[in-house]
Length: 469
Ligand code: NAD
Image (cartoon, rainbow, N blue to C red; front, top):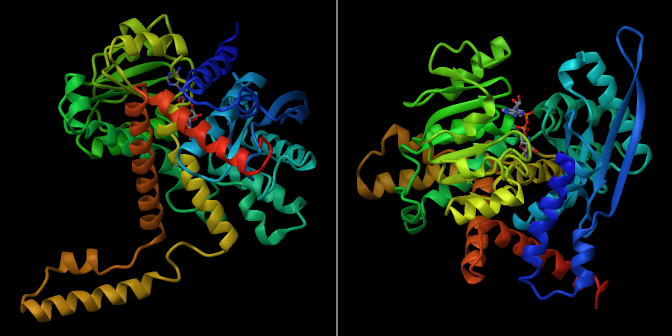
């Protein structure tokens, strides 16, 4: 069985385990689980040297219980039909867990982006977009892509531009894709949103004194030793915010090896080094160890896989020393590893909850695009004036002058970034407590609880639509 076929199997096994804890009819559960549509395509790329390369790509829309469908686009050599379906399925459940009104989708282009020039990547992205538009797999109310592994704001800008040229609805065209650069309708805070959401989720879990005691840990993030796998968008930002809250980043694993430093690496400096030199190798602090995957077995409190699926398997789960596994990536733990780790009393923070910050802020971007106004634009000055008046009233009533710091922090109206970040924090904290309560009530783990939460929410919608009276 291929690696990615296992991934789809793993998602389905988690679904079935949770489904047994609900009392929905079998047919309805099947409808929720199955993938509605997959568009598999092949198209030619004329390379810079004039040769022709055939590119294989996919888009899966797992469900249509809400519209649009939503999910990232991945550029990776591992992309396959099953991988895209597994990721699209997770998107449906993820959106339900954090109450984002979308159904799940995912796209994948089977390429190693390092093998292509920027202009080749642009041609691939534009042609892929053209294929999606032609088959009605894209549009603000139909299916809205976003960044995922191997893609970022640049690809989203090309997608938007291509869609815009083909669309006869220029007014709402910007809502066809999220994760765009801010100048093209992107929202402040989207780039770091998934990692920031991962941080909020870990912070919630670690604030639970009883749960931490059961793991032999103190509550809080201060001094927690973290190993991160994958210093990309999600891994970098999650590690950066964890470090900001007092955690020690004792290991960073990348493709060719891992950087280890027991008293903590500076994430921003390692990221800047990688940006400049193309790799973490040669960073002046800490020591490099190989092979990279051995870093997963380092002694630490929190292991943060933020690369690809299937990294923690039956083969290495017994050797993992971390007490908490924070699934920043999608599907990093196989179901076999999940069983082993739970028996070893390791706390797993599941992907379908933990990395949902990305789609949450994508939802905010989509709303911003449809309303054609930056968050805070209409209210910031009004809020600021009202708060300033309140602060002067306090000064008059008490006869004491407030410090300049209080006057600027409390007396300022909210910028877009403040609104986005507080909306993200509220979403992650609320959803954590929701799945935590389900896990206690059903005496089950957080992954199963998150699946139960998603299944119940989607089932209600199908029932209300009268499809399954
Ligand atoms: P990315 O391309 O920005 O970064 C991935 C990083 O992982 C790269 O630096 C790559 O070199 C590294 N990597 C790959 N294989 C590795 C290995 N075997 N060992 C160590 N490092 C390895 O991707 P990303 O957007 O950060 O996505 C990472 C994961 O998070 C994926 O599973 C993705 O589906 C998931 N995710 C991403 C988002 C998002 O908003 N980007 C949202 C939700 C979930």
